[in-house]
Length: 560
Image 1 (cartoon, helix red, strand yellow):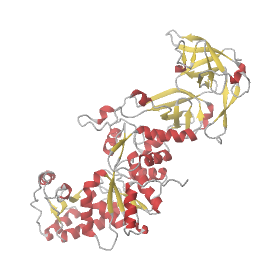
Image 2 (cartoon, one colour):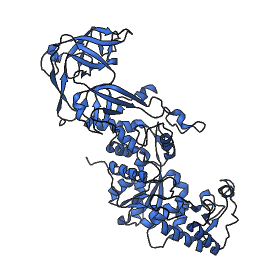
Image 3 (tube, helix red, strand yellow):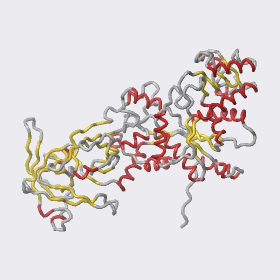
Image 4 (cartoon, rainbow, N blue to C red):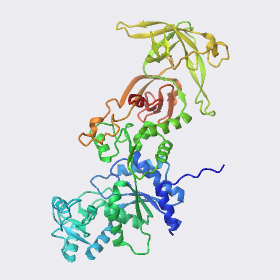
């Protein structure tokens, strides 16, 4: 049977049609153009995978271009973080470029617009300019400065550039039409005065170009064939094309802007402005907090580059905005870690289990598979002794028939070890159980081949030998918001929906000794508990683990 051909997304269909209409394959060029005013998030990953994926598919160059035209919000820290995230995702850019590389060319083109009577300097207040723009149902009115002479505009623009005018007092506007149906075409601002130090050009410039002016012209300079933007830029396409028309030579390739739906993820927010609020107001512990939807936060939580790429490819490229269920992202990391993560044992809420008929000074080494899904993963040694830790919730003095873990006078199997039977408990003065006493069947050792080892019991529980246990801190991360779309409620602040249980810190957990040598970012399945990785805060004398995702989706159960 012939291999089924993968269907093209609508962006690929556009490119294929352009190639059929005569666009040379060697003219294809793409770009990923982040503004360095924050860290990248899972929504940006969709754009990264799209643009760099197209580059791989068509063997075409892909530029990384930083749209750095607003020095009040942009920092080198964000530039470095963005580059690190893209590399970590597995992509390489052809050229590292900056819109600030083109400041002189953009300025020269602005002069050209003035000379063609296509731009003018306006010294009205921002409120006056906004009022004159009208509304979608009411045409705008001309600025009283719209008909300044070309010479006056050139002189004023030169003063703006030289720093001779007060910040915010003058702007350069394109002269298009104050009656256009598209309000973005109503004489948009091209330049404003900003006395701010730029992270690359320092204090060389006192004026900075607006995004709409910079974006298309930068694409043109770089000869980008397809400028792919999210849907909110659809109304900007007309302006994009108008600006290109003013500088187009008639010979070079003219970039084509096309839009796709941004990636929205349930139980989080995707606005960098709102994510910055979470950081600055202390709701999270930085951009790389494992509860954040940032790529750095997901990486620290234990998500892999492959799982994010797979998620982006599965979610696909859409024409309409929608919300993707976070369960799809969780599915991809579970699917990967199930195949790759070693199985280990950890007890988060410990209670002592004493095997009363096991010799007091006896210790033995048990052998366990690292990962039954990977035949090449090998085995590891686990020490076993008379006194163990088990999970508190794995024991009940009395329980119904549906409880298949340990209860008085009933049997369970200790994972990779023996069948035990609970006989008695020891309680403190508050009635809390401090020890569970049990007996074991010496002939029931897992893998021994004896008849007793083949005996079936309904429950299996995990454990850690008290004598050999390593104390660890475990951070149980959950969804940051309780609401599926926390920023969809216009009458409420999105922060009202922050999940107060999004982080639980357990500082008295115990892990098996094989984890002593685990390195930062190493990933494991804590058997029966979930997938965990070693956090950046971890040290030799204090191991710290993050829960990436539980084995089961507890939210699905809550929301039924």
